[in-house]
Length: 52
Image (cartoon, rainbow, N blue to C red; front, side):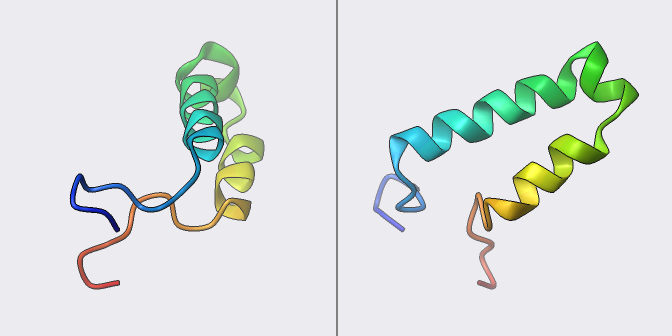
């Protein structure tokens, strides 16, 4: 984790997460969220929790 609060994830990884979150917020994602949530889970930790 950097001083700016980053997780060390590459910018491309962050873009992928943002894209998945946008899809999750779309009507498609609201109707069938499980596929998108599974993709997020395969990416691992997105934001490091304070308790690790």
